[in-house]
Image 1 (cartoon, rainbow, N blue to C red):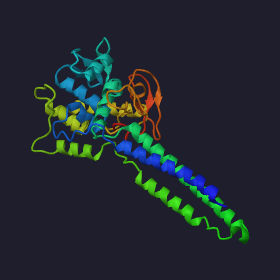
Image 2 (image 1 turned 90 degrees about the vertical axis):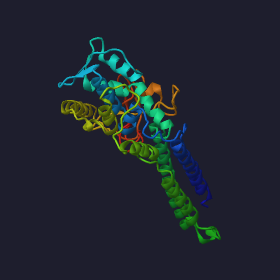
Image 3 (image 1 turned 120 degrees about the horizontal axis):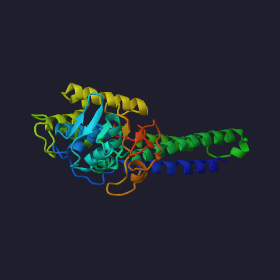
Image 4 (image 1 turned 90 degrees about the horizontal axis):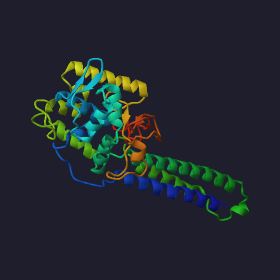
Length: 338
């Protein structure tokens, strides 16, 4: 009597549960396990891990300012005085400044943060197991949504079967088993799957958290070893690890914070670095041109497009105008990279 409904319920629940389990395994998979680098993580990777793409942009700006290659005025104008780029991120910054070498700080931060080169820093950290890729996080979240839908279908079909069984005559019921326990078993199995496949909301993995703890502890403050600053390494290192609030230069700190607030208000989004508006969309596997869900064409290119999210919206991953992002797509709890 109720076997057909039960078969439909099982056919909906079992594939949805297996899909959710598979999506969670992919989210937690570490493609390139290398162990923790201790206090030897490069500067820009440290900035991305601690604060996301916007922190990388701030770090490059302050690094060039400390080296005397860039000037940040109190009004928020940036003037590039040395157009010789020392890495690809600096090249993006210098290009954004244009032929005049002058650009508004908030515009510069958005352009650098959304560049493909900065987005790929996050991909590399995810491949090492220090961060979670937002495209795989979205897939895990969507897989659980399907599982919730299948669980709802089990409840509906179970109720329908119960009404049919109660409405049947005694002779029709015969020795047939009541549908309550079979459907209850499916319902409990679905609840177990939902509990077991819930993805962690933090964009940083436990290994990433331990990495930041290693860099924040020690007999002396962490300083980057992959740049040739004279007397400015401690300043840039503190910014990369702790954010703009760690700067001792009050004027520069106030200018950067003001532009962060302005960027947040204009984009109506949030991030880890005092309201910066840029997120990390993930461009898939490092070294490839496309990924599972997000690709370099959708989250780190010069084209104008959008990549979807399951939560709040924010700008992301393009050197022009693209809309992408969510707190869920970032690995949760904050914007991508925030």
